[in-house]
Length: 346
Image 1: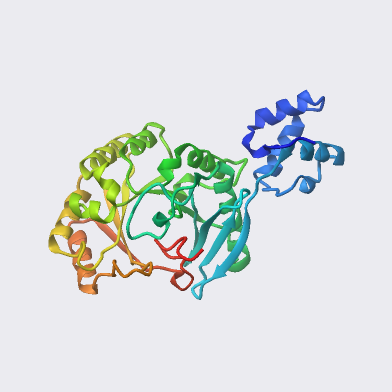
Image 2: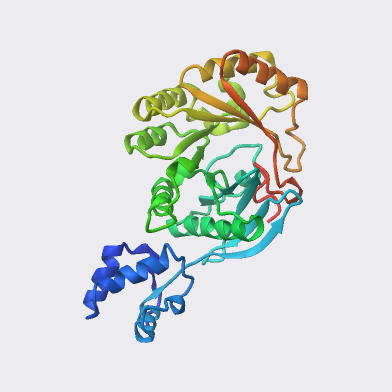
């Protein structure tokens, strides 16, 4: 039996076919195993019932399936579910099922901890320990799809990369995971139902545009004034708004798809008329819409939800400039599953 066995899900279908040929078996065995690994999301080789016991033992001797496990599940009064997901090396990330109306959305993580330093976010207080592998991202979606069917009697309808981590700092693995999620040989979900949310890494936004990705792009903006945004999100000093704007213009030119700006309004930070005017101006550079997100405290009291009057000022200004604006009320706050709270208590 091999020590340090390779994770079988790191192999392509062709590599699996080649492996079976090298073992003196038929190539189609690779197709069978690949189906079990991805579309059937098998957690063990024993589940592969159309493969002989001898073949299953041979796979067991050569490979592992480094699947995730839900270490703890919390259910909110509003139907939201938060999972503490244990990875094969003992590290933990969190993922969330968010039910709204006829939809259920999976909010998935892409890194253990985070590469960036947004001051309002609990996850940023954890150092980035490592990137998630494609299969670890995929597994979060599989788990939430099962939970959606079990607790809400419908399959998962949408996916947002808004959990722990900056997706564009784990670009290759995120794209590989999305390829599997959208493939007919995986979960077969439409890329139009997937949103990748970034804090704004201009070089990687341009790369996404060049790669002609089919999913949607959201940007965690929170201010369209450089010094204000830098005080909230210090990495803005490295990637200032002018560079972000140019990258977003490039994205729209290449993809012809609008941007969603995620925006939280905080008392005394970005709740003045100049903040509103700057956002309206920024939204006019590229066709876009704005999601104003309710703030969820992370215990230190530095950031506080702005008044209803401030929120109304933003919505009036955006709507009068024909910019679509949605106000998103947070869900799962009673279990620290709301936006910005992941890793707060785990």
